[in-house]
Amino acid sequence: MNTYDDNNVFAKILRGEMPCYKVYEDENTFVFMDIMPRGPGHALVIHKRPARNILDADDEMLAQVYSTVRKISQAAMKAFEADGLTIQQYNESAGGQMVFHLHVHVIPRFDGVKMRQSSWDMESTKALEENAAKLQEALETV
Image 1: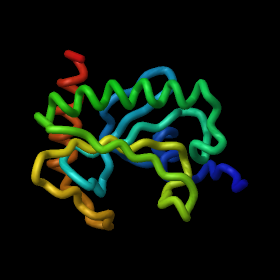
Image 2: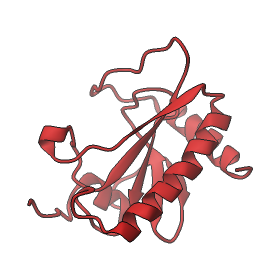
Image 3: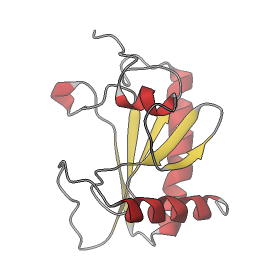
Image 4: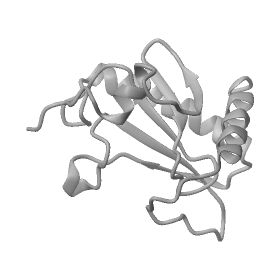
């Protein structure tokens, strides 16, 4: 199995070495906006402890991450008046993982609207700030 790299982009975000559009944080997890979203409100939930992916995370870490995924999902449904959600989690390169730190994508979905394909198109700062604020506001009531 591959080893965890302390210099991956999410580890740098957790250490404050790279900026992000923070949505939520608790003792174990951290949530921020995906800067290359596949749809409006696309957020990432990560664990604060090092884990490359689901293959080396322990049960407690997974439970903590998915508890936060549920909370963010409820907020996303409300904040974006979504019709549904796509929850994605990739493992290793062959599985589509690009950043090797355990993370889960929470993507609000809308009837009749296709999800954007993965790309390197960055979202505008304004949209990321607005979407983070919408999620934060909705979190206060879920």
